[in-house]
Each structure stands twice: as structure tokens, then as C-alpha cells.
Image (cartoon, rainbow, N blue to C red):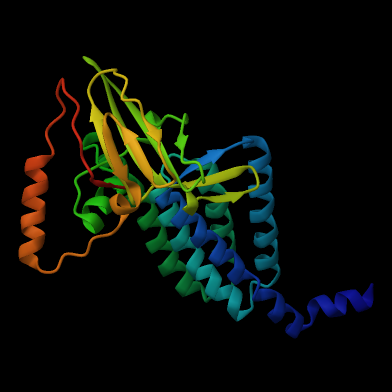
Length: 290
């Protein structure tokens, strides 16, 4: 027992273990990116939560055990910022947010940083969390704008938004599993608005009990304001037939780089003219969604 305690207290052993904290930094960063760019499907919520809490507990314990080591101190300054971004991109998914927030708070307050630094940074982080949550709630509740809307408009210059609560899980997947057609059924006062999007299924990421389905970068192929049979089907691995149209999804999803500002302006003007508003007839669009 004395030998074990001696090893556990050895500074070189503690230093080596402290480098494991960077694994948690990378893992949390990956969760932030996936939460933003993907739709999370959970096959077994209880099992997923047990595993998720266990992973956070293990890394939290390791970081607390090595809280005086430089690598852990660096990680302790990074993970609160990652937790903040996770709260913004996953607002409402508290089962994902709360465990990392608890770990980041405990490790930050117990790490080897000076008290003055903890006070200043702790205050800034607290303000960031409170103000960020307040602003996000106001933007989504009163203006209907969320982070997906802003990012899509910023990175793709497309004025679109996707509400995951209207997503249908009855997917139409290509024969090789690379692409899928997804319906979003938005119930309006005067009926339903059904949107069809093509997503890159080969970019999905599978983990125990969960699947991150890649959404950011998908393309809308059809919008109709009433129930009708558009007969969607895959006629090959990369060609989709829907509402009498044949669509090459590879070309559809290909990122087109504008040659100059004039071409960009012309393309935007042309697209604005050729994308009609939702009415009693179906409309076709190829906007990028986030």
C-alpha cells in the first residue's frame, strides 16, 4: 500500500496522468461541433446518459487528482469556454450540457491557478454564461433566430432555418447508404408545409447508443404547402427522382466557389428570382441549410 501511495504521489506520475485531461478537451470540442452540425438520434436514452455521466465523472476525477499540474490547469481554463459554446449550440439539450458544466466548474475552482486569476476569470465566465443564455433565449423566443440560422446565413449566404422538432425520422436512404432524403413537416394554421432535404449520410458518426446525423450543409430540393404525393425514390446511388424531377445529389451538394463579387451578386439575384414563395403549388429550391 505504501508503494502504491508513493507512486500516486510521485510528481512525474501526476504529470503523466494530467496529460489525459487534453483527451477530455478534445472530446468536449468534438461534442460541441457535432451538436452544432448534426441531428442527435438516441437509441437508448438511459444507457447513453449512464455512459455520458460516467465518462464525465472519470475525467473529472482524473483532473481533480492532478489539479496542480500544468496540463490540467491549461485544460481547466479551456473546458469552461467549450461548455459555454455547448450551451449555445445545444440550448435546451440540458442532458448534454449539465455534466460538462459541472466538471468545468469544479476543476476550474480547484485547479492550481492563483486566487486573483480565479476571481477575475470566474466572474467573466459567469457573466458570459448568464448573458449568453439570456441573449440566446431572447433571440430564439422573441425573434425566432437561432445559431443555425445565423451560421447558415453567415457561411452560405442563405436565409434558411431548420426546426428539428418538425423533422420526420422516416428517411429515404440511397441504396449504398451515402445520401438520404429527409422530410420536415411544419404544421401551419392553414395546413402543413412539407420541406424535403438531401443530407450526406456518409458523414454521420455513430457512437454507443447515439448517432450524429450530419445536417449542416444539406440542400433543400422541394417545398410544398399541402399534402401531395411527390413520389420520391432513388433511381441510383447519386440520383434522386422527386415530383417529376431527376436530381444529381453530388452536383447539388457540391460547393460552388464564386469567381468574383459580380458573379456572386448575379447568382444571388438570380436565385432570389427563381425561388418562389410557398403557395398552393410546389416550389423547387436548392438552398444550403444549417
